[in-house]
Amino acid sequence: MHSDAPPPSSPDSTGRPDQPRVGPPAGGPRFGWLVLRRLVVMLVLLAVAGTAGVLLYVSRPGVPERPSESVRPVVETFAARRVPVARQWSGRGTVRALDAADVSARVAAVVVGPVPALRPGATVTVGQVLVQLGEEEFVQRAEVARQRIREIDASLAQLDVEQARLNEQTSLDDSDVGMARTEFDRQTRLNERGVTTGQDVDAAQRILIGARRAQLATRRAADLIGPRRRQLEAQKAGQKAQEQLAELDRERTAITSPLAGVIQNLDVAVGENVTVGQRVARVVALDKVEVPVVLPAAAGGMVAVGDAVALWSTGVGPLRPEWRTTVLRVAPEQDSATRTLTVYAEVSDEGPEGLPPPPGLFLDARVQSADTALRWVVPRRAVREGRVQVVADGRLVSRPVEVAFFLRGPYPALGVDDDQWAVIDDVLSEGDRVLVDAATRLPDGTAVVIAGGGADE
Image (cartoon, rainbow, N blue to C red):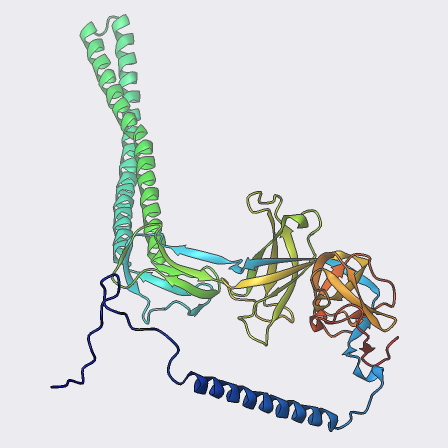
């Protein structure tokens, strides 16, 4: 039988079977023709696209030429000039009440009122009751003192009676002593004439001695009336003082506000026991506040009492953007740790400013010296990267500047409606046209047109 299987490979000289041969795949010339055809198609398409582009460029509509001046950027400038400038210092401060009181209890008692109870934020007047304490104990103490005074008055009245009795007794004793002395003298004379015996003289002498003893006892009792009276009067005065103190303590049970203002804190409640010296409330007056403004230490020696101060806070609202006042006093020493100087400004509700800022509000401040000098001033936005640009011969030219300090407020003499300015060194000349806004970022040498003027104004 014949088989279709290929004959077994014969081993080569090395004894291994023959390996299959590696060569170009079948149909190699056909593959090369396909690649060549695709390359030709791509070249044709590129040629067509190039031809279309050339035709479009040639057939483009013509653009009329314009004068070169019409494409120059228009810039806003102002004429440089020196203006009177007052040195300004920027700082910050927190409003604090100029008049505030921590109201304390002056007696120990139980809180019983007022009813209705006040709350923090309530407005109070001078003398208005903030806290009412129980007064029963002090009323009883005053009554006890008055009762003791009545007892002392009774003792003094009894002493008056005793004084009158002793005065009468003293008068009688004086009479007895006089009579006893007369009898003793008579018996002595009779005894000298031998009419009486010595026993009669001795008896008369004993009577005289007894009368004198009684007289001394009465006088001694009368002499004690004065000290006893003074002692009772001292006791009465002490009791009167106790009565007055009790009445005063009773009045102190009504704890009142020492000033007109607003209650900041109310620290006690009805039924609570308070002790002497314990704070029960804090009242703050809002009609006058003080702002300690912290300035750089360099302001030392240049800021003085009476210098203008502007205070503002973005949180107050558009109706009251600023409060204007003056420096009331200046701290004598600078803070070496923070390198700052503190000045104090006062704001009240008197005058056109109206209500002052509330205590605790954080404010920005600007202190302006009363002394002025002619300086170069440009809008703050005209300075960029330490340079300003001026228009010279119709082109922009940069000039390096050093900013001495910044200002706030209007300078209508410069003709620019800004409120933030930079005071610079002497790099400008009178009449130089200075670019108002450096944010345009135009390079030096750019030909420009001045708004409202020409290329060379």
